[in-house]
Image (tube, rainbow, N blue to C red):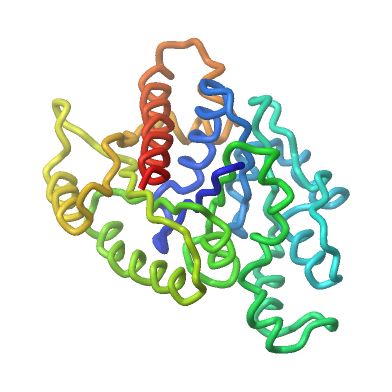
Length: 288
């Protein structure tokens, strides 16, 4: 059975896509886990960071994307088509359900337009469980499923959360990025409770962290302490540093765990530690 995890924050620019992609590579390349990444952000950053632009366009036009799941729901088609997935060349055990630039249009459809075969009551009760329903057949195919969520909790983000076993909130430990975390957490927990979900809060991962002499810079230390006080034992021990190298990695579509150059070693160590902590936290939650 796979473990599904939503990577979510209302705040844009905190590195959800970077974390999703490199965490997936760490789990597949080091720990030999099979991983499915699902791109729910209409900016499609995960998709264009994982595959060549031309390959992405050709695939979503001829084979499928996240939109295919929504179209299947409206047609009453019950099964998930494996052809919708892209096999990531940089990592043999990593797959992608790609995003689509027209996704906002389809998400609005899920707000206002019910399928012809459903009553309004059925539609309102089922539209937040589309991903859960269609991914059920994949539960035995992958060890991990990651949802790279958009910076909101609209219909698709709600779908992801309710289809997940856990959710992780990434943040930069500065005032602007961290301020809304209590509101995000409260909103998500209310959503889970309202729909009788079982999704658990796995924790907060600090991203784009800056240090000075191996210590957090002052502003980051202050925010780290505030977050830790509000969410005891929920801040990951691992953090991901702010490095110019990351933007180059994403642009060049590199799996850092395939690289032997020493310049990649600090990032390799951080994402390996992140993957290990993810697995430890999951195990600890499962024992409760």
